[in-house]
Length: 286
Ligand SMILES: [Zn+2]
Image (cartoon, rainbow, N blue to C red):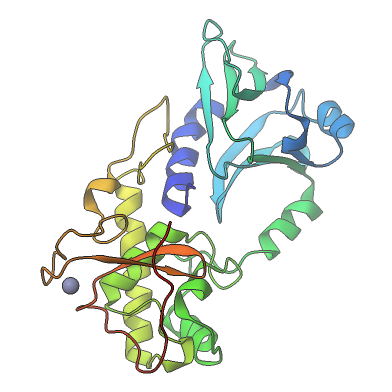
């Protein structure tokens, strides 16, 4: 699933193609369940004629600001991708939403597994969407002090907490594993066992892995593409994620994989010391 750096890259590349364009019509919408809000009839009535004023990201949502304070929000989930194409390029059977634009091009939302979502939000809807997420990790309200406050009072395991979008927005499996490796912290540590220095290290690591991934245009392991089908480059930089059996670049111990809260988790058993006590992770089966 695309995480913060991937959706950020998509928003950045989509902006110049969409901003200033007027959505003429919904040319195709053959998977009605992808429209989460408002109801389908309102969506079909309210969207055509709107002009795109801005394209940006919040958490893992791609947001297009439209005129009259509407926002078209798209979530790509597992296999979704978006693109802007010339009229000669026809949608295939996996392209479930096509919007024609006033310059003759078409906006495609393609999604093989059909988990992707689309919403047309008014101002209240946008406020609610924003409020459903914690701070942006590269924004001003996410800082070491915030992370200390959040973690010292929680007894939960660290990795699932970092995946919790209400604690911090936009992180997923790839960048949590990478950040924990960079900070040299084991994913099974309990949040309230971390000392302040470790939390500061974790904060720095989260920002570093995200900034690097944005600079590398995201991580393409399978489906993720941006622009007109370009792959990201960050998969070449991964330290632990899906690197099981390869030597750690810091200490050469082989990277291991275990399952934490049903998520495949990758770590260096030497750099990331296991917590004391009786935690015995399930064997990796995924
Ligand atoms: Zn290591």
